[in-house]
Image 1 (cartoon, rainbow, N blue to C red):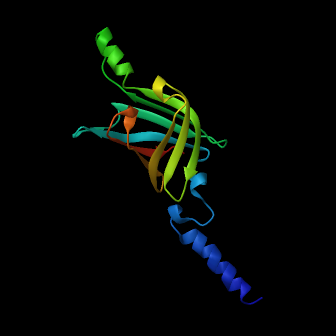
Image 2 (cartoon, rainbow, N blue to C red; image 1 turned 180 degrees about the horizontal axis):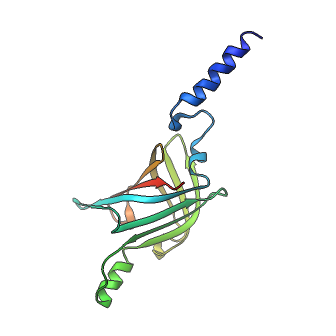
Image 3 (cartoon, rainbow, N blue to C red; image 1 turned 120 degrees about the horizontal axis):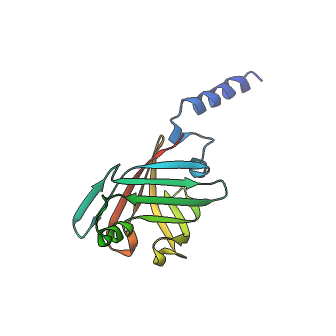
Length: 159
């Protein structure tokens, strides 16, 4: 019995002192499930060209519910212009929803897109690599919109 008390105290202290990303009781799924995120920055590289965007030009919101569904909306704003310019702006926005699963060992989130503003995404499965640092989430998509290249998005947890 005397050994049980120090062992219990050590386990409790370990759980309190470990950084959030290493918490014993909190798995990766728990970090996603029931969370909301605001887009902090984003960028992409395609054909040797790099573009980095931040608010207010780039805005986004990401939600994961407790039933493994997700919703994402990303907008790239631009000042009002001609109808052609407005159409080009609409093509730069994306919204999609569907289901997700987490592969903790591989640090990937797998999404099944049920609906999207990009019709060719609807019904597809996509994979993104992710990392957590406290209330920050970063994910990388190796082929945005079906084109060769890389997109990276940085999110901040909404509390």
